[in-house]
Length: 399
Ligand SMILES: Nc1ncnc2c1ncn2[C@@H]1O[C@H](COP(=O)(O)OP(=O)(O)O)[C@@H](O)[C@H]1O
Ligand SMILES: [Mg+2]
Image (cartoon, rainbow, N blue to C red; front, side, top):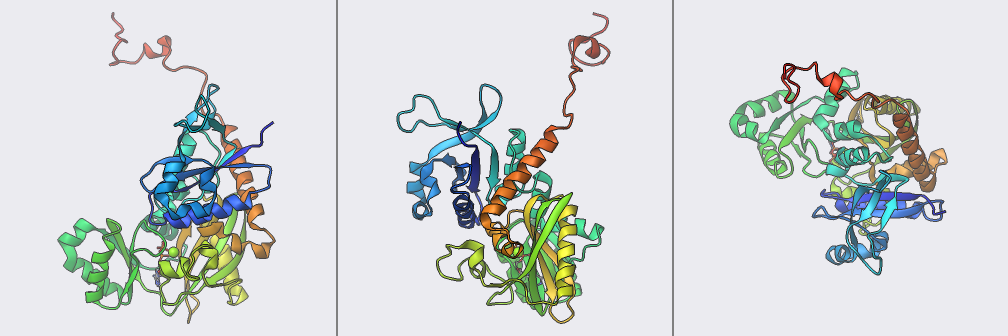
């Protein structure tokens, strides 16, 4: 009997495309020599779905055009029995019919955009495929910084004050928006509502810098938010693993940036190679903060994970006022860089165990969903039932 297939899905139309490749390669190498066969599903920068062994080696990503030529186009499909498969849609080699692979579970390893915002998760739902990590709801909410904060406020989770606006509103009402910013009080942080990795995030100490920052951030998103800068700032992150019903938290980490605002370079290019992804960024683990503060952040992390109905592994990021130790929730990453594996070492969970746990949770969640009644045997459109409904073509009662 063949071993179960795990599809690791990554890439995608996202500024964090390369970071996703790194997270996927880490997941793939962690699952080597396990009971699973790994099938890569790489979404190219132009949106093509590709598979093939050529995608399993990081070396091959240096020339993306060559890589996409050598890989094989694929898609989700149903086999003859109606079960979801990964279907190769072009013929490579000597196979007479397109190859199809059964799917035990998918591990989405995307960062940003459609891979992390619930769109890809929705495709898995439509095909009834078990998948790791958060579902459609938590994924899309986690990607919208404004709506995420609104939900937090409703649950008394502390967040920084701020407001948001669209590009058209900025064009029409710039003076009143800059006045709102002044009332909020400088320094302020300007950021795109739906991006990640610090792309388009900047700080303004006065109105001139605000206008410059807003105009530059609109290159990345049609919706921006302006919020009070926490200063002096200490950033603390914590990971949660499980489901809203049964979860555990990791130790806290304190990521270190060269500047006060962590940039894309700080996060991924600190050793010049970028090869290790998030794990290579400078960080202190466990965070060098009082136990009481760690405990507060850890229990908030679990509360937020459950509030968002997250699943699998997530990383919760906090902004802490370094003078007062006031804690503000900043964002939830439903597919954290490198799956936050480095935060789980202290809990004696290594990358392989973390991946196996994600597969287990994915299968459990899927089984739970399948165990519920989702359709009725009775066909409401059977002739007898439809006859009573007026106004439908072909159901005229007097004919
Ligand atoms: N309100 C704030 N006060 C101070 N620094 C902030 C604030 N919001 C964001 N930052 C800084 O900007 C970085 C990126 O912002 P974040 O909201 O995490 O967006 P992203 O999704 O791009 O990571 C944070 O890691 C932090 O360094
Ligand atoms: Mg962040």
